[in-house]
Image (cartoon, rainbow, N blue to C red; front, side, top):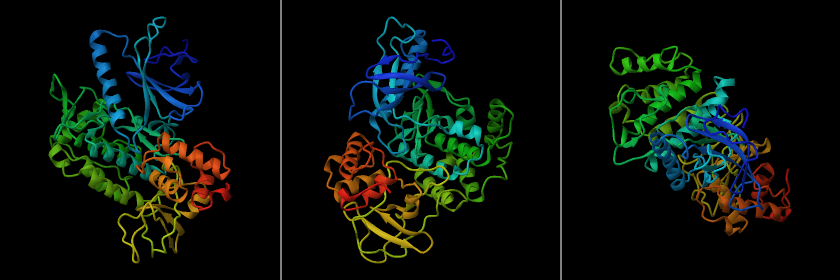
Length: 453
């Protein structure tokens, strides 16, 4: 285990647990270490060939530490086991290490997670103000809304807990501080990241159930995160986390003003200011549903890779064509067209069973199955849309692959298997990835004639 002593849970390369073989470390926090892993047994349609194994040291430590770590692990397992949403990292399985020969690992809890390419934190280290920042923030807000809508709080929203997938799409992760709402509040462990903690929780009262926390704590954290992504700086002054925490306390008491960076784009100033309102009572007016609409509008009108939210000039006759990829695509060329605020001028809006084609003078031809769609030109350059639902619609209703399961927006094993079935039928590389070739073929009624562009 040479070279891994710095990790909370050092695991040697090649270590086997269940059907997985541990590869290189991907990242580490205070209580866990994440490793790349590959599936070593026969292909399993329920599991991906590569995954991320999150090892939590729940088997060794003092009794008090163990209670705390087990609580953190149980929170994450419970949330990921109950919630499935496009912007939340997916958990495939949980394992427990049973290995007395390795006492430092014996009893550790292991989460088998969807593998990401890296974190937003790593991106910001190389590019403090990424061009795709507004589009990233829109998806982060969407993930936060999905959590709150399901009755959960994240509790530790920060760049290190925002993951980017291979296609550039966002996943929220690290839910060991998450808490389920009980009415207007929840209880979380007495631990947080000071720079992203609202003033009222910096020195909270803690009882036997933990710290009382409300959804507005995530709203505050999102305001800080947005300021960091868009300006490369924190919204409160100070050369250290402690100094910034002191500034946040003075701000909450009304003895210091919030001085947002002049580099903050104008459409975002009101959003960030509202998220960073002094008190919980002031923040409570800005829930994630209303915040998401504002963020999407700001991301759409700012100078970023995200295209403006255009309304189609007219509906053409319904046709079973649409555009889709498995996940949202960001980077420098991400686009998502949302039509949910538009009403068709002729005929009924497109549905899953009856998608539609539309055109715009500026951007040309586009496709939609429901209220979300993708421009034709983005597919030609290798980008894609954001709705797994659209892929499921096309697989089920255009190509008759009912094994896709429910049209629920969850790119799970059934959808992955249906994509592989379609790719085999269309003569494509059956890798289960919805790339440009599969994208193009999904639009064609005759799958047997489909070919990669």
